[in-house]
Length: 419
Image (tube, rainbow, N blue to C red):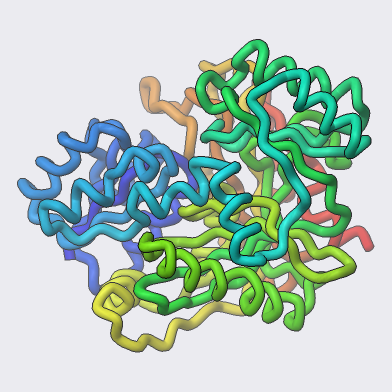
């Protein structure tokens, strides 16, 4: 197959690498990609949301399968456009992508179909939003309704913080149109985990779960980010709880989307929290998570291209996963997530370690050296028979280098490896 991957982050690098391992795939293009992907695919200078240019490219290069990474392209209808031209593409339609592109849509959908989630209300008025926050009390959760690159969520530890977040989102348009409407939720206590599944025509192939670290600083302090690290498996989340999440969240969601006339194809990402009354949904995404993809997808041992072909043809496929543990550390630009300072040179990344893998995101090749060009720069994934081994491998690589102009968390995986 000729494959086109759309996107430019670490998630897309993981997707590209998995296609590269597949004997069913002969040529891989990535649009636009980044300078760290040049060894694994042919980068094409077309932005992920330039749908017309991507359509033309797919026809010109006789692309057999297009895989969409980022949510913005999905929310703008790239799948609908490709399907109208009878091109094979893996991802949800614009209507199905509403599960992620509108928090209020997703919450109303869950309420309608009794899918477990936190109590909530939706607001466009600052005054009524603050009244509801006061009624809930702190902590509570303030979410921009639309897409905000993983940064549109504030877990307010005090009512002052909740009021400030409401003012920023509704009053100051911190996230533009994405925060012209907000959702306020009760705070749920428990461990979070990410449960992703491949879905098509009601067929569901669950992936191993992951847990990511959203806060910028050690000890889960600081602002929310797109993710500062992740690991898989997550041994403190029981197989029974995962099975219950599949039964009470994933299956009903897929069935309900079909009832709504918006059947789901693609990666359904359920961001879940393990509460005392069972798993509840924090959020849905309609694509691979980042950085979870970089620790989950490498565990796939099946031919990725052949599996996706079989899924889209509604043929049975025995998908297989490695027992190896993965733990990934995000190296972020100084100042991320508020205002990333870019242009710093990365240290040498050459290593004799065979128990790490690198996934590039915000990097640019300047005269043969990588420099930072975005907020999250790369992810260092350690590999081991246990999470402790994977953690040691990842931190051995990171701590042997100077990271002037960058920052990273020093406690990824602490819930497992420090208990």
